[in-house]
Image 1 (cartoon, rainbow over the protein chains, first blue to last red):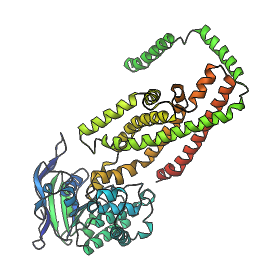
Image 2: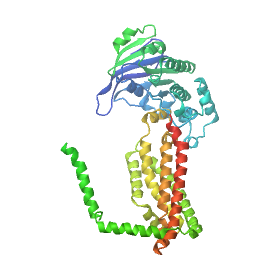
Image 3: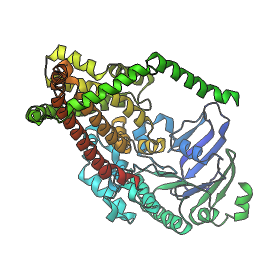
Image 4: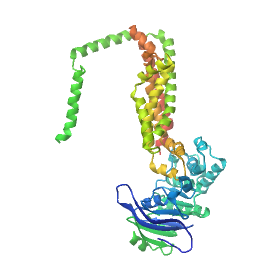
Length: 249
Length: 255
């Protein structure tokens, strides 16, 4: 549980329990409050429930008990389209359509605002195309907009995924270990870009990570998860001591 | 160890029993067959090229029927396969769509041709519909299985942008399966060209009609010309589909 006492909470999980069918609980009585405009990092060893927690927070999975609310409204009461205007989600493997171009992938971020008939023929409004180009530009890959994703490098794909999420205009972006496959320098560059974009668009960022160095560099808040339970919450970069975090995870 | 050998030994014994029942070990009959094959081959040589104009016209009709039937079947199979995709629709809807596809697929293409000859009368239109019907049943099943295999993470990521089911089909499911979709259409086109060369046996147009005439009149030199034409068109189709695969499919696997 984190609380910096100043910023209002954007996303809250209240005593959340979750288990996949016929399996033990992955999340056990998890309560979290994510402050607005901050970058919260969720850390923990593999298989500890980070991905499940993020998918529950994103409204993709429904908790077995407890609830998640965004701006005070339970996520399960919101439609998929309503939720998409509030929360953007970047999965670990990015979820890009490999045969489509970078621009087409980014434009998918606007699908929640486009009617079926227009989308069916690929008729995106000109302003959405401009915004998608601008998002690619912000990520530094505007020159690759017509390139199919399968031809792009790992770092370029990360940027396409971020640009797609930015086009959703969400208030919160949830990213699952999405820079974990990159080398440290590239991961740091990608995280700097997403952090800068989040600050520019006033987006609250929630990311899971396993590298303590990156967490210290990019997390305003760090939450440690262990065996599906909140092990510790750290407020502010300065108070995040490596030893302290290592001990908790 | 014993239980490991049980299956291959049983399969081998079953194969021997089946082959015996089919007359595979009737030496006298097999020897007679080899002699007859020699006679038939000698009677086919040299092929009579005088029938080329007639055979070429019939061949073109076969190609037209195959091309139109495959494309019509492909277009009809897409909505059916989407309805049959369990991850998009309820069990009831997808099971009903799969049942329809299985029902269509159960009937061989020659029987479909007979059905359409009865409904539409003699000629290549009946053959075209026959090919289209069989193509729907085959492709709907293959595509539904392909679509179900779409990476769930991609589906989830695009769903979280607020995409509707139709948008998921348009932007995720079909582009992700595009390579396999194209490969299967090409396979079906090749198959249909071979299959449609006998549809004329039942009056459904194409080469089959003249093949039947030459067979019945024991005119094997003319038959040889027709078979050579079929071979040529099959080789051309192999070449075209190899080019298409190289052009559109291999690049995607280079990632």
